[in-house]
Image (tube, rainbow, N blue to C red; front, top):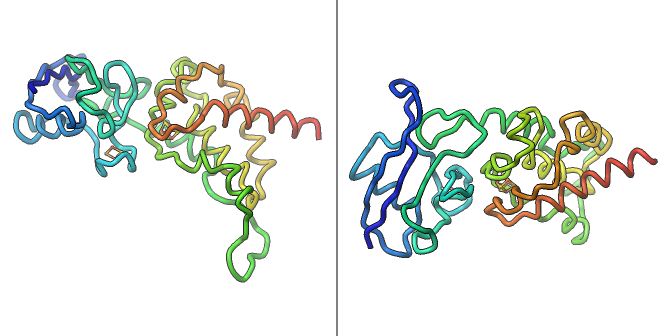
Length: 233
Ligand code: SF4
Ligand code: FES
């Protein structure tokens, strides 16, 4: 099949504004959008710029807007999208070039949530044990691959980039409900700040956008409940 793609291009060195460029490529229905981008870059236009690495939905580097939705290009099959396939960079972040955006504000919010286990107690001789139920408590939020599709689709984040956004709240959940972690109070204080968990307005775009199927809205609700519980302790 012959596929038409309309891709937003922008090179800040030469362009005043972004503009669309149309490409046509031969494809199999089972090809992924990433395969088409690679075909364009390798055989038609080497200047097309985008991120990708694993090609398997694991590294999170090729999140972009495909036909109006934030998706991983390596997980979208050509046969499942309408033509022309309209591709734009992730919204809400500064465009560095073409489909590459500056994710530093996203990672700054991720780091704000202290994305590591905190436990100053003397470690046991082997590992810190955890029951299957304790592990299951935060299993869903361990699946995050930091693709930014959620935060980029979040209207409260569009309105205020200081809001930590859904991914940082997923990170908060992952450590808050880990029975080995000892920084509950500090984590809840961060979440309870002005631009913390209460910035979430329950829009739900984040859950729709997540390529890992993480129930982000549920995780955020659980974080909010923990803040309220801690305030009444
Ligand atoms: Fe991507 Fe989902 Fe992680 Fe958000 S929660 S960064 S959408 S994997
Ligand atoms: Fe790694 Fe798509 S290229 S997630």
